Each structure stands twice: as C-alpha cells, then as structure tokens.
Image 1 (cartoon, rainbow, N blue to C red):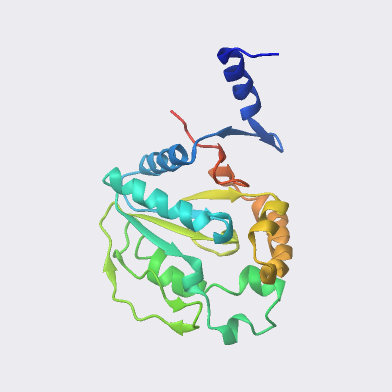
Image 2 (image 1 turned 30 degrees about the horizontal axis):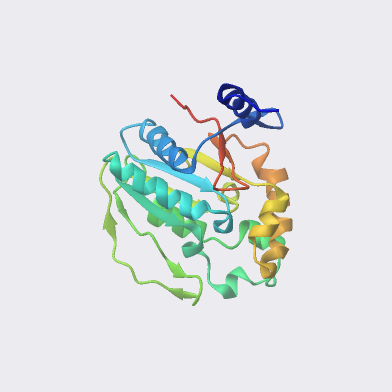
Length: 232
C-alpha cells in the first residue's frame, strides 16, 4: 500500500508526540531545540538568570548547554558557561569513602560552597558580577588559577552537570535532560557503571518530586523531544 504525502505527514504527527508518565513530549529537530531553548531563556527576564542543565555529559548535556550559550549570543544575550565537573572537590575529600561510594557521588563530589560563592552569588540579579568558571582540573586533581571575569547585568549563567538538584543552589530555571536507564547505561563508560545506582536513586528521591521547567527526552540527541517549552 502506498501512502500519500499528507497521510505520511499525519502519521508522523500522530506518532511524533511521545508520552512518559502522562507528560507529553513534542519532537524537534536538534537545531530547532537549541534555538527554542535560547529564546525561552531570553524571555525569562531582562536581568541575570541562573539556568541548570541537569544531566551527565556522556548523554550530550554539556554539548547542548554549549550550543544554547552560542544561540543566546545570536540574540545579543551574553552567556556564562560552567560545568560542575570543574568544581569537584579534591580527590582526597571526594573519594574519602571509596572510589565507588554512591552517596558520595550524589552529594559529596561537587564543592557546592565554592560554586555558590564564586558563581551563583555574584551572578545573582543583584550580585557583583565578578565570577569564576572553573576551580579545579578534574583530570589532574589540581586547582586552576583563573582570573576573575565580570558579567554584564543581563548575563545568563548556564550550568551543566549530573545530579544537579542534590546541590542546594538557587536555580532560576532547570532543564532536565531525560534519558532512559538503558540509554544512560550505554552512554556511560563501563568504568562508570557503578554510578547507575546513584542516578536511579536520584530519579526517585530528587527528580520525581522536584518541579523543573523543561524536560527533554534525550535518548537520541539527533531526535530529541521536549515538554514544558513554550513553542510559540
């Protein structure tokens, strides 16, 4: 049986809307998603904003945040990019209870007080604007000497990292990079599979009860879908 173009279009529109737990997801092309996210962020207010991209880098979270930052630039909205892995605590503290301690992975790896002091507080709407983007090299476990930078009054902070909601930080908006357990397992290197238990616990204890603004279905970054984003 052959299908007319209109039939195929209706079929795609019907099957394109994905549902998960009663949440409706609308598919978007990757470039369209980036631009729509940038426009949505820009509309949240004229002053400084602190936006979280909640998801591990292995599934594409860091790349997405980078692309949204670039798109904000095309809208004449300055963006500051920070990844939580550059704010890990020293290994002697981070791995105090072992290299594969799930509870430490959830709440003990990121130096939250330093991140709040050097990034979130100065980039508040009424903050000084004097900030750092990196504190520690995660691969060498050494402090990074970085000069302070000055953010304009309308700068947008985009922070990416896994398990973001375990950190007591003042987010203005949060974008959840949602993946299935299977997709996450495939994305993580085998040496990091012990972290899967931390992600499962995170979903149960932090993600499910926590209100977030935008949720992405991101098992396949080449064909994402979104819920909660104003698509006008």
